[in-house]
Image (cartoon, rainbow over all chains, first blue to last red):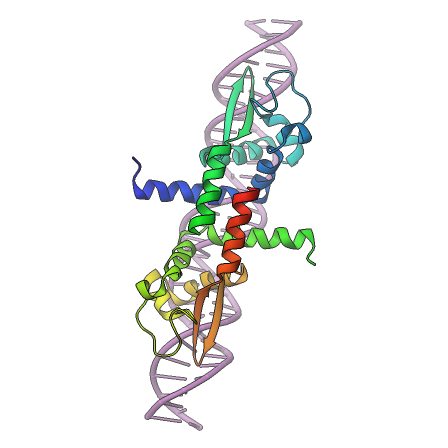
Length: 108
Length: 108
DNA sequence: TTTGAATATCGCAATTTTACGATATAAAGT
DNA sequence: ACTTTATATCGTAAAATTGCGATATTCAAA
């Protein structure tokens, strides 16, 4: 069981995460990875997620900046990282995103 | 009809507005003004909203800072200001808040 | 019309966020 | 082992956010 303060911190992280346009764009792209990212050899686009390299390319931001945005989304619990060989793939945590959406629709 | 860019700007303002704990606290208090604010002589607590002075007192922030937070919420279209005599009262724009919540639940 | 109270705005400091280059680490192929 | 590629981290600069004091403005009462 989590403390109230910890839950508020978690909500704060999630709301700050979606308060940034680049991070919302990433979440949007990951809704349909096949439509937005090229085919991958090492990791299924849907099952494992999109490769950080492709996300970086589409964002048009530097690698450290992209990594920072992805970390913010992971720390907020909105996307799930999966390391395969030397790559990290990211996919949406649909359950967490749905929970957040429901929470906001009900309690905002 | 609004442009897509203008709609994205509006969403950005709304998400940035609720990304701040103080502003979320204000929205929370305004859900039940009678429970959180003292009776008012000049303006109905529910119909017109809570007086900025009382909101400031509860926040424990300076007047200019409180005014800034209230402006952010007004500019985001989440609360409605009403000037009566020398006071400004604020109440939730329930329709706008519900729209935002629904939007996030469906499209996040 | 002066006084007092509420609100709005200005200017500025402190903090946080965003972005990047440099560099370190990790993993794979040569 | 060495090189290449992907990722992570460090340090730092620029921009945005948050907060406040000082001050202007607004409005009503004295």
